[in-house]
Structure formats: C-alpha cells, structure tokens
Length: 67
Image (cartoon, rainbow, N blue to C red; front, side, top):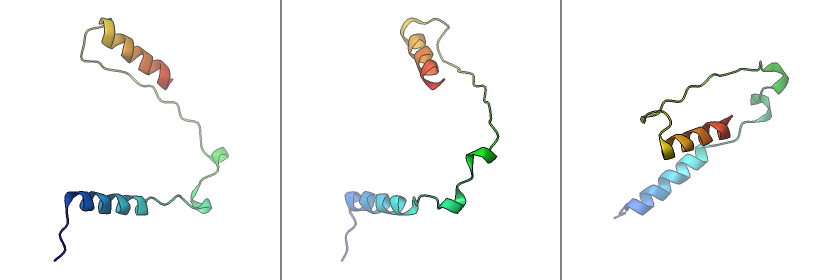
C-alpha cells in the first residue's frame, strides 16, 4: 500500500503550487501607459515608545528602504 510521508506530502504540495503559478500571457498584461499613477500614504505603527534606541532605528531604516 502507498504510504504518504510528510516529506512526500510537502514535495507533492510544492509541485502543485508551482504548477498553478503560470506567468500571464501577453494578452493579460495591461499596457503601462493605460494605468493611472497611484500614490499611497502609509503610517507605521510600533509597539514600543517613540525614539526607543534599537527598535526605532530599525523601523526608521525599514521605512527609508521602502520609500
């Protein structure tokens, strides 16, 4: 009888996910000139108080990297 181990199951699931990830065909890709430019405004919320030494520096660096 066929025994499905955890490794085989994970491999089978990864193949299924990869098989479903087909790149879009050329007729599905909209032209970039037809898309309006959107601007988003984001706010960052942290769980520590403002200017907390190590955590705040990392959060500010992350915000700079995203912008």
